[in-house]
Length: 147
Image (tube, rainbow, N blue to C red; front, side, top):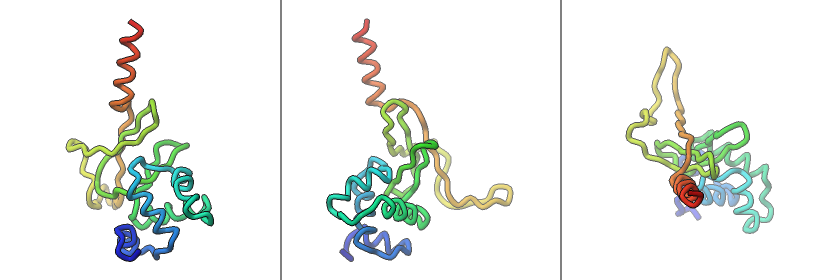
């Protein structure tokens, strides 16, 4: 357990490891679909029967506050989490709802903190909205079938 990457990430970010916290971190680090609290809960509740949605919610919030994970607010109804904390942008597909990691060289720098008009910027999030490649291809196929 102490040798795992998830365990090390918790320690590095000042999060005291527990069985539940480690399982949630490992879930984030192996599921790249930007899961919601409910998806993490559903993915782990069979393995950890004592796990509650509240524990998942509080743990993900703690991870986000400590920088061990990133909380992505897509809109008023959807918050998801990303185990990849390296600087990158997200793409939200308006058709299928998928959130995809993008490494856009033209995006504004997402790295270190800096000041703007005396305000200290500590965190930056950038996401694009549109139609993902799969949905665009499906739409194109549907159009050609109708012609």
